[in-house]
Image (cartoon, rainbow, N blue to C red):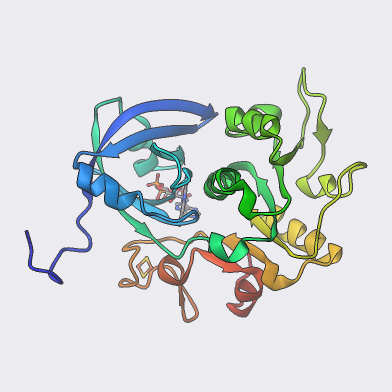
Length: 282
Ligand SMILES: Cc1cc2nc3c(=O)[nH]c(=O)nc-3n(C[C@H](O)[C@H](O)[C@H](O)COP(=O)(O)OP(=O)(O)OC[C@H]3O[C@@H](n4cnc5c(N)ncnc54)[C@H](O)[C@@H]3O)c2cc1C
Ligand code: FES
């Protein structure tokens, strides 16, 4: 063991893949645990909105959000296959090994939102980082006011976490509003962009004393922010996560910097007020 203060901060710990679950096309959820139970216990202190660095031996390393709530037993990542590292992860089978370091980043200050209404607005795989907060809020239901989820995908088959969505709807603790860009056979829900749900008959969005969490592709983000500001949301009450190319994840390499902010350390969670000050064009 290294003397305190001399540990290698880049050294990931070995993780074992337990099982893989298909979610939507190109996206799978990987249930895993650290080989060392002490590392698992330490990692489980993560906060919703933080991220980790995943290493594939001989291939490389990439950042990924932590979709489980720290209140859940299992640790898992939900990953879309886009390039070499994510493809290597998608090829792993149960019992295969990879490595993880983290958790990193600031995360959502869920304690600060206690007593407030929570409005989650997600598009596509933007639901991955928000899942942690939604489950956390549901498992600490008495601490929050109204909880609403507005979620949109291109097609019904691309709505992520289908089992969770059904469970949240059934729980009675969360109002779930879903939409798709293009309907398919069997879909009798809303068709349109996610912002079209805000003004749907029967939908009432609380604005006062409400934090809005927004995650999704840049085009969706821009339109949703416009809608939320028009409804009266304050810029400081809208929060999101910024995704940037990262290398070290711990404020050393400068790859993730926007102006004076290190997205890996100061973020990835920022209020819209802060995002605007960074001069960030999302
Ligand atoms: C904080 C954070 C959290 C993330 N969480 C998740 C997650 O939970 N699930 C998930 O599937 N992905 C997540 N990502 C994105 C993920 O890190 C990238 O998809 C991954 O690095 C791609 O690695 P690769 O080697 O497979 O692809 P590469 O070969 O590196 O790239 C393939 C393609 O993806 C593009 N790309 C790579 N990284 C990014 C990026 N950060 N932003 C935009 N485009 C990129 C490249 O330009 C290229 O077109 C997250 C990124 C960040 C910064
Ligand atoms: S990723 Fe290296 S400083 Fe942020």
